[in-house]
Amino acid sequence: MTCERLDALCERELAILLAQEIDFQLKIEQLKQDLESLSGFQIRKAFKAVDYLNYRFIDEAALRRFLKKIGH
Image 1: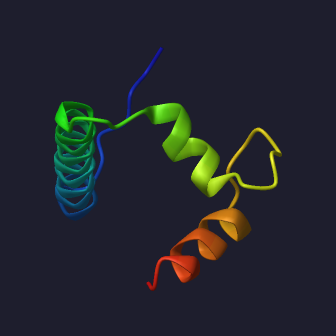
Image 2: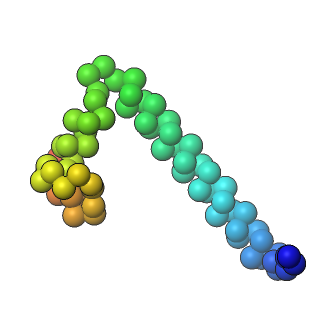
């Protein structure tokens, strides 16, 4: 298996993108932990609040409806 080296600009941009993805994932994990530490928070209730039509998944339309419903 041969591996061609990326040009410097492409390699730098890829490194930036990967760093941003890692930062994003860390923020998401912190938000999850913050939510779980709230008293009375239940993930199933939160899911059902967004999936109020009981599709058993959350799509973009459901998320838009939920955010509009809560004033965002």
